[in-house]
Picture: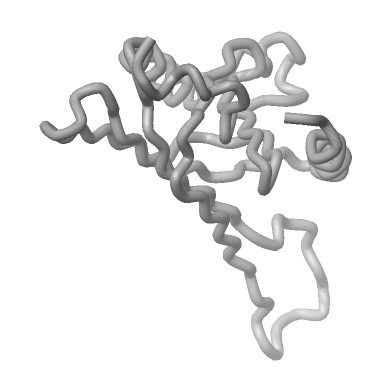
Length: 163
């Protein structure tokens, strides 16, 4: 166990395919960007039920200690499984899928990895810096909205739990 790991009890974020969780203890930055679609002025009066915005989540984290290489491989595998169908999507017959990100700021489902970067500096050999960009790909229908509302409730519960 490295000098960092004894104090690592609650991760800053957890990325999962619904089966395998990858804890990220040292998240140094998290951003959530939403791009909203504005209807064309003077366009048709008909409305089409489409997604109104795209969400992109970006974060930077540090993988620490001797288990850093195992977490690196796990993140690479999650990035691949998000593209090919996660274990969760297979278990629910594609009713729910994609990756799940749990942080203090948000809980999101139906995510796919858009970019994944690992960096290691010579001055910090026991740490691997991770940068990841995720895109939210909500499924059509009411289940996606229900999951969003449920994530707010789960977030409120986690705030109430002692650390």
